[in-house]
Image 1 (cartoon, one colour):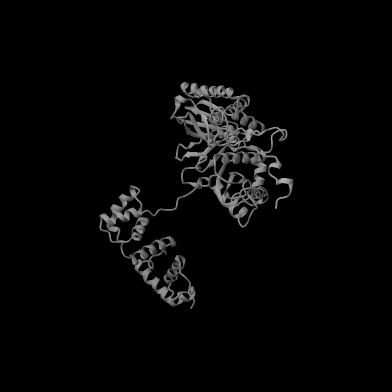
Image 2: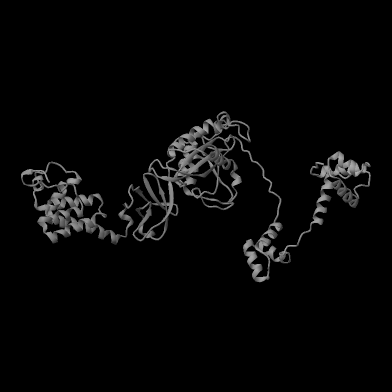
Length: 516
């Protein structure tokens, strides 16, 4: 006979029928159970005293009795770790890992069991009920959640190379409307730029932004006092929103954007390839409006874009009248040469603060140095690595005197050589006085090797062809080009590939015929 699995309600029905006087055969036939099963539960019920009395026990009581009986009937072998229970409890209270506890028991307690036995024992000790959670819903415009999610590699439209790519996602918590952008890094500049783009896409600013403990925004992740980077704090003040970092290792506190990142990966990007990151962002721009914005959201059961347009957009904080100028803050030490290093360029600071740490505030146009919240220097931002921005007042007075004397001496020596040498030296010093001083000194030294007259001729030729460097003048002198007439080679500077071009007659065979 086909039988089915018995649960508590089936067992209760068995007992009810037996109390009413049915035989085991009748109960088994009516309930499609095996007679052995009915007999087993008759014996158990008689042992528990459940067949007597006026009232049949309810299902809850039967469940408790069945579990107790099951545990008693299957005691199983005791754990080999049980004798060491007190030691294990004390070690776990101190935060000792299970693997370390196993090693300690082996070394100090002559424990012969396995690591798995210790692991099972600890898990039974620390077994707890699932933690209850409360879903928090916020009013319209109150909160946005933001995060990055890695999405693989894509072609960088600027370099044509494959680069790691992340999706920046900002989700408005009430409407669930999103802003999504693919980016090549998670730097503070990218972080702030994506915020600006998201706010402008929404046409407003949420009252609070909840974020994970991202390196770009939170320098030190602590529970009660997160230390925000200066750049993000300044940015938040400009747009008027509050910043609420999650507690460390609690991503559920920003579950809406966590789900948003997963949704972007599995719906917008899954199974799709793009020519480059730009094409991917164009697709995401359409997807946010046409797909994500029009779906029936699983929690609100409304369309996110409709909720946003009809309610939330109007209650967002207004955008400020001036767009935020991206600022980067970075700590840097003032080195013995009186300069800090920022993005491979050098900016001077007061010599009395050598060895101190400065805050470098960089905008696209300026670099400012702050010490103890006071601005100590301001420089034009360098556009090329290796550039030095030096204010002479920042240098020690005795060093400045030497620097000022050196250019003066170079000018005097150049004037003794000739007019062309003087002009070339003046042009070099006018470009970058301190950086080109060595080049000028090297050029004047060539006069001691080749003579002042030849140096003057080399400088004249270098000026004609706009080759103002020590290397160019040395080549002219070594090759003897200063001895050749510079006139007749055409007016104005020649192309750089033809600076030292010779007349064709000196190169072609006699008679001007073709080479064999």
